[in-house]
Length: 84
Image (cartoon, rainbow, N blue to C red; front, side):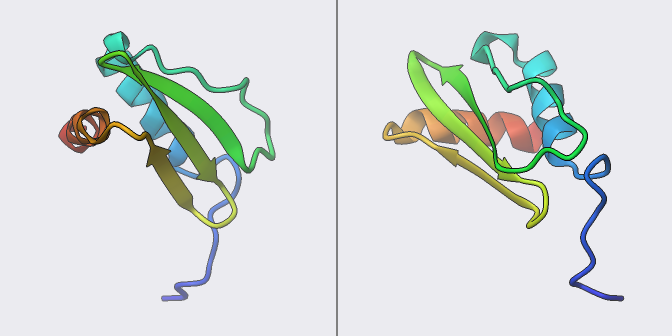
């Protein structure tokens, strides 16, 4: 198994996972830019308990990051994501 093999742009799990989270937890009001075939370095936002949680992912490097100064908002988003 080659651990350095990257998924194709339309196979990366980030956007489908975030969209599934958005559908399951509409109260988070998640926004992402419009999907593009070769998207990479994508930024979005989720509104969790009155706080903006920054969403960032890189398709090529298979990297997903959430950031917010309010730890409780991050914990809630993380917990919701783990239920999926």
